[in-house]
Length: 393
Ligand SMILES: *Cc1c(COP(=O)(O)O)cnc(C)c1O
Image 1 (cartoon, rainbow, N blue to C red):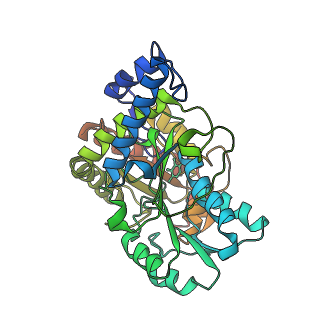
Image 2: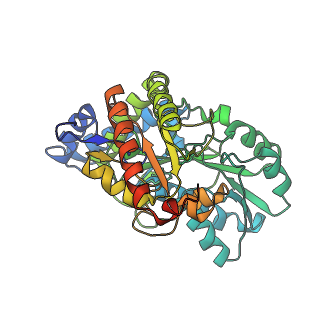
Image 3: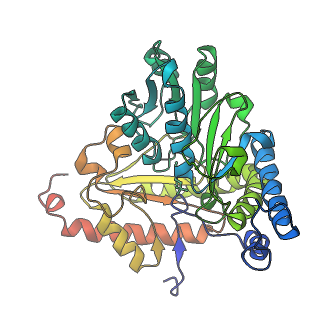
């Protein structure tokens, strides 16, 4: 037993706010309440300085300059901006966009919206590990192509994409390249120039910062337009009074995340591989989804045959373990994940999925306890499964 302790294994959905991040945010939720646009008095100027300091932290973390960083209200908004804002403004140059079928909905749904507005979108199919082929991207380019959007790492199966190779192709053809790096920043060092990306999205709550604040990197010279209209905040490109405390939190969190990315990755990989090895060895009829090596340090994703992921999640919760069947955005619906279907899994198998995403506070004991609970729970659920009992194995 784990004495009523909770084991949180859903860091891909959100991560706990770091206490040192909360500490630096706190004054901006209390006494330092000024509006950064009010530059004629100290309260406003102090808030402005705090926002600009956070901008420096973001720029430094990804090898950009401060004037290339824009704050938003979420990773979702950053993706919408990079896709809809850019495409609408550049429609006169062409109406074709290339993306991949297993992107986050924050990319797929803006693309679907653009199709209604007269754009044509190619949704490339990845291989069975979830990797997009740079050759497929090159082959999909036509004279109308203005934008390529490929995520850095998948939020469900953890597969890391060959971003630098895709960036080189985009640059050679003079096509803008967006990457959703929301899942990557805290375990993979990122340099926007080495990657050759033109826009890149981030979300604070995925790396120890607060919810409701994101950032978009826009390479200078790239005109990504706007999707929010109103005041002149963010150098006239993103209207709306800044979430000062949130931005300060994002800045503090990214400074810590970028500095510790490599050591955190080393630590998580050991735990991840222990979890994967034990599950594959000790539970029958299970498959690992995603790439065997090109995967996020904290990500595991399995399909257990003959059981429903939802049933498994409820039983894990009762045993103190917080897990996910895939994407937080689709849980609550009964459709299997578009990512698992996108890598070619059958509906029936995709239904038995479980994502366990590890984080800084995860311990080897958490992994051992989780494996024991999983062994017992999967067996119990299978004994109740009509498919399993028909002896179809
Ligand atoms: C979480 C996530 C988003 C959305 O970010 P929010 O800040 O929660 O809107 C976008 N893309 C990926 C890959 C994500 O994991």
